[in-house]
Image (tube, rainbow, N blue to C red; front, top):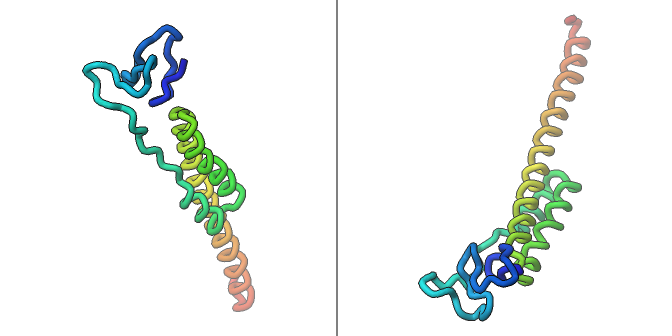
Length: 128
């Protein structure tokens, strides 16, 4: 049995969630002596950064980030907190992969142009 509040697994006979204390028999009431944990903690979706890196950096990795970012809210709505956290982490990872790929390609591009135009400059001016 999974807790509708935090998503952690519990035994089927458990009355309270072992992770957050949610009353599993009556989810509208928290366990005695525990704070009300019904509010789901914030899980960042990284949708806006995913869209930006798709447009500005590396499109294939950005698209993967958008797919994971879009899953966050639907998993939270379904009560799958662990799945939402995983999708959020994956979206963040793919955003960074997109940015780092763009930086690496920009460095390769600049080095390539530096050596090509540097060689042309030296050959035109008779320097070897």
